[in-house]
Amino acid sequence: MPAALLAKRLETGLTFAASDNCRIVVNGKRATLADLKVGGTVNIRYRKPNGMLIADRVVMVSIDHAPPTGDAPPKEQHQPPPNLSSDLFLRGIITGVNLQGRTITITGRLGNQAE
Image 1 (spheres, rainbow, N blue to C red):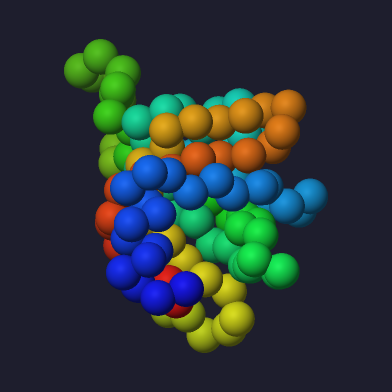
Image 2: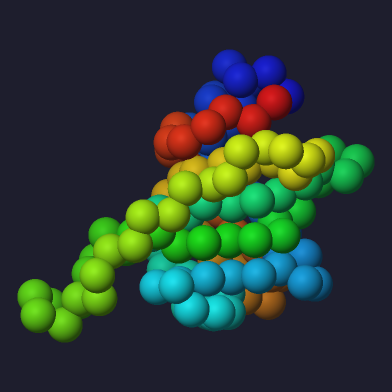
């Protein structure tokens, strides 16, 4: 997908299906889809078989609605690794999580551009 088209789709939102083996990480610990919060910034490693967006790894790197001062865990800086395989990487802000459908929707134009 050309970078310009990806940027346009990110403005309206991209929806990723979580693979059966999708690894989700929040605050440096293994988590579930239910732990992902709308407004959080995530790095997603995904693939596109037959044009479908399938997430294999989701790492929440920050949460806009942080806990009260003093209770907040230290912010961790996660950067997606360089694209050394056929996997793609994208960074965005969560706008929706569908637990029944096992999907994550993100918007924004953050991080690297996947083609």
